Image (cartoon, rainbow, N blue to C red; front, side, top):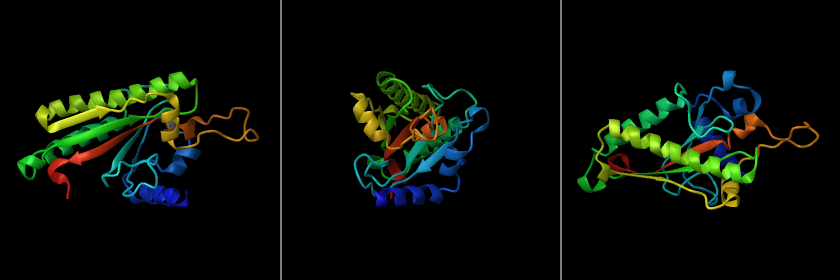
Length: 203
């Protein structure tokens, strides 16, 4: 567990372009529910449930508003998704022809707010929305379909998603009558974009 938290804080501190730190997510309410982006990269995952995919490649982390399955127009995270598609499209043009495949899998999560069945639905729909968004973004980059493999992970049950979401978003009963923290829940209302292969950009 210590290894995980150490890796977590190193990962967060290592990305100076992140527009909101973990401390800010937990202690400051974003104005008008503005969503922000946190970048995480675990080169060695301490367990299969930790954020990471075993490839050593970055995992991009998007947060969603409470109950939402899409990022509304104007959300700053659209810039991240469009930029990611443009970068990976370029990676599919570099290097040897047999090393130009781009592979991505999206994993959606939901917080502890609300019924279990609804949270599983939210998690799966969030993953599908990001996958579909990237599909369209790659179309604008004119990336040949045979060079891109995009998958949206679908959780078969709530228990699997709950184990994978990783973060606690509940207060102790002594802290508040309402145990769920919407601000802390932003860590669980997320979609992870796992880069599994980045073509010619992979060293």
